[in-house]
Image 1 (cartoon, rainbow, N blue to C red):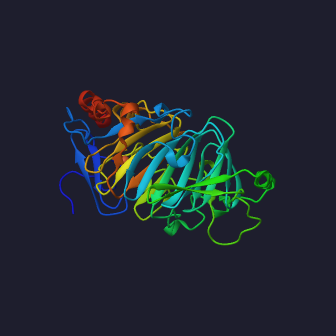
Image 2: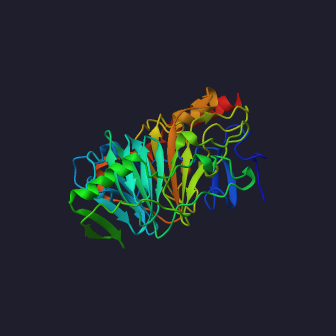
Image 3: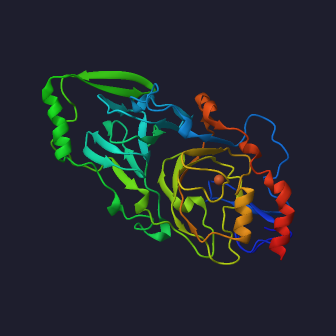
Length: 387
Ligand SMILES: [Fe+2]
């Protein structure tokens, strides 16, 4: 189906003087239509109403000395719905107890710092850029070796899986050979010696989002062996080899790293920019009407957003269009970058998100107005595209 002036190929050879907007279902994998607009879809004069795009500086969330930073299960909530919870955790001291999340798998991401993760399965040394999937019910503790800033994403009642790679084959994006599991190594053996000290060990358990505590007279991390098909796994973004095309801007879903029944986690890694003269070089304006979207910047300056640095998070709810910021869009037309160096995590949820009330204190005001530059520049941009 089509009408009027269109491009025969989405995200390429956009008719001069127009802006492409995608409305689509099922993330970026379902039915979709592309509109070619005379004005930028985000060039609104003003936004009325409380439900709106928002931006947060998570660097401003409580420092490590604040309440809730001693145990990951108490870390400040960022956003949630019935199928997920996102927390921001900044531990400064080692845990002297164990945490066990019985409500769902936990996906940990080390934004800054690192340290030793000890769990039922052994020991992993973590560094910045590591993801760790911690299966539901695993007891663990963390000993930071430097100032650390982690994201904790709970798949409530669910588990994290690897996405189907389809035609790309199972070794695309990353070979499963790069996934690491905890080891029963010397460090793990050493921390077991604490079991002989006679001190009590507490296991804090979150179940149905209520807390209980078990007290043991020994260190419960005392396994001498394990075997099976279930274990924590670690993946660093540096081991991801992103899918790209010189001639086509692939959608965010091509960068999917983990999936649950109601959520997808994508990793945007450094890559060359599309080189085809007609190919779009920034994300297209889109509504993604079945998903709410969180984007967290881990490293660099995000290529399609103006003024977004590491540790910042944007929230773009379903139902409203968003897209590249004016300066980034203009640069993509007139002087496009050839390489992207930033690293970002995109979380798409199939159910509406509630932003935690405590996030008000670190909200960057005016995000809904951050595309206003299009009001001034869209006519100029159209002239340059036509030229
Ligand atoms: Fe988006």
